[in-house]
Image 1 (cartoon, helix red, strand yellow):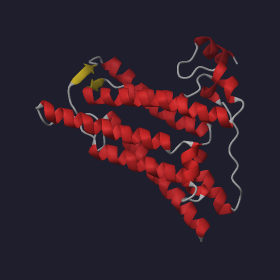
Image 2: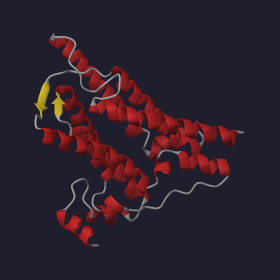
Image 3: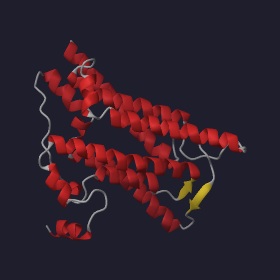
Length: 252
């Protein structure tokens, strides 16, 4: 019975993630969701705008702290005292879901347009890049085992009574061109918009800063747990591919 409950917990957290992910696509892009990243500012006074900005920054800080702190080995060791090991990753996914739902709910649009692409071709290109960003995020997780990343593999192995073994370090497809194609996808999704508002700019800048900081801590952990990562980091650029490497990959 315990194993079944753990499996159901993992499945529920993953199903919640799918809903949050789809909502995020509409929230950031400004379509099909009741709350959106961009909208006209409802007040005219400076104090209200400053208050809205502080709330948005606080929401982004909550996400950054939760997403990074819970991923650190020290926190995982502490969490293992309270949560069974097979549920640890699903609990991380659940916490991330809750923080993002809070952000979707309490986000305060600031209005004001920074740029607005009028060209139809320019808009199409940017929307294609936006879609490519989200698809890149999804596809790159699948390349390194999507189900392990979101906790389903852990709860499924526990349900079957099979010991969990960490996955080996691999560099499939785009991981041979840049070390963090997942983050490249996020950056495309955050920046590739035809209309950039002050709100969206604050969001994109904050998330870009978070990604750069998160990479530093993530790579520190990878160097600790995977001996091959040091050589991989030396050979492969972090976010911006080298054209010579792309041409070499194409030729292969």
